[in-house]
Amino acid sequence: MRFQGKVLRQRWAKGSKSDHEAVVLMTPEGPLKLRRPGGNPFVDPELEQLVGQEIAGDGEVHQGQLLMKNWQIVSTA
Image 1 (cartoon, helix red, strand yellow):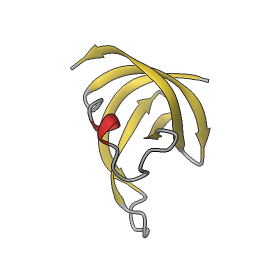
Image 2 (spheres, helix red, strand yellow; image 1 turned 30 degrees about the vertical axis):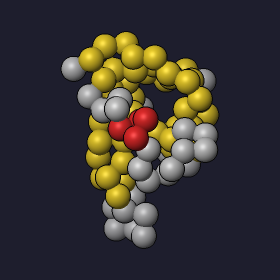
Image 3 (cartoon, rainbow, N blue to C red; image 1 turned 135 degrees about the vertical axis):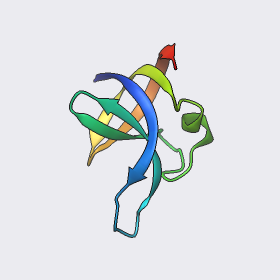
Image 4 (cartoon, rainbow, N blue to C red; image 1 turned 180 degrees about the horizontal axis):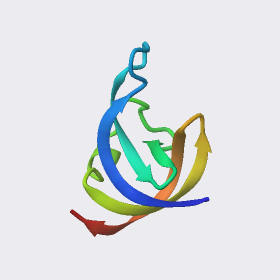
């Protein structure tokens, strides 16, 4: 599936053992935590570089997380 939105950093899984600051894609349907196949689920330097940018990416959603296979920058902040 194709998704588009602004990439932000926000608190994820508040109050759980997995509570952390995450890189998320803000979509019209709500935020999706971004992940890459094989990437670290908590800190991914490649995804961190996307914060503040508008992107379009392809991937699959699973439990509120977007496992993003590829993406392109649409615009920067």
